[in-house]
Amino acid sequence: MYNMRFLVLSCVFPPEQVTSARTSYDVFKMAKREYEVVEVYCPTPSRGVSQSEGRIVQEGVHYLPSFKSKKSTFASRSIENISFGISCFFRIFFTKKYDACYVNSWPLFSVFFICLALSFKGTRIIYSIQDLYPESLVVRGSIKRNSIFYKVLKYIEVLNCSMADSIICISKTFKDYVLEELGVRDESKVIVIPNWPKEINSTAVHEGAFDTSMAARWRAKGRVLGYGGNFSFSTGVLELIRSFESKDDTHILVCGAGADLSSMIELSKSKAGTHIYSPWPRNLTNALYEEIDICLLPLIDGQGIASVPSKILDYASHKKPIICISNESCAATSFVEEYRLGVTVDWESFKRGLKKEFLDEVIKGYPSQEALEKISEDRVKALNKMAFLIRKDFHKIEQGA
Image (cartoon, rainbow, N blue to C red; front, side, top):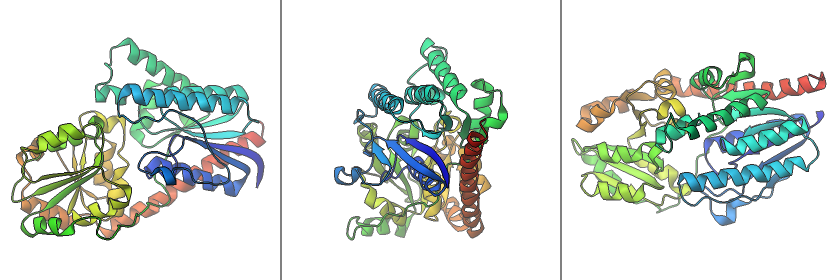
């Protein structure tokens, strides 16, 4: 065991169920096997967890004060982002130096304050990029690409990358962007490691929590398509409701919560076969997957380039075929095709309605057992790659690099 101090700094952490929270937890566990002092800085978990389960007492996990965003607006999210970054800045600044830190925080402001403090203390920084900013904001319509604000945000991300000693990208698309757009000249410091947790949690279904008889009646005549997750512009779920046309008694079951809920409910009134359930407690996740035939993965134009939806792995873990709806090839569509998890259709085809014969072919052909086994193998490889990166950085510290 190395006589060194390692910090995991994550904006999400279990019991939150998002993939990046579980990845940060995996890094925490790996580091605890290698190094004498391993600690976590994170905000009190709030997304998809109750107040009673938000704080879990665990050695080395420190909850830092920060504003809690209750609205999915740019202003509210920015305040949450900045407040956590400032909290981390002062905690790092007035704490004994860490030898290295894995940074998985909200871009761009939070990461900037964190990297600034870590750089001042001489801590090696392993920066994990989960989304491409400010590109994601452009896709969401929050800012314009030719605006001064866009240029300022991009410059901040350039600074973040320049302060990092290693940069983890979750896909080759992300790596290309970092090298070509963010001014990183040393390709060896940018490593592609898919954002795959060691285990994909399978939450228990409460008895009687979901009326299965209704979905069973739908399936008796047609097919049930499903989506579970956040209701926001960037997830494409509003466009999913707008574009859905029921053909051959096809139903769509959409579960979750978010800023677009009221607009979705209004749209669904004129859409036969559309069913919206909100709020959707975390403990009912399995109920959704059990009652649908096919999982839907909507990608609005540009979003597939800027981020990779983590729900792909959740869909795959429940052995349900995926229909990816996208007008462009991207990391998400490539993943679905490479692992034979399902098919991709463009938005125009989806709007015309998907025939039962086509849906039956998808159900029959995907996913294959070989595909699921390959995902398991590649997940282990990704975790081993992460462990090697952490050890490599500490070896550099030992050598005085």
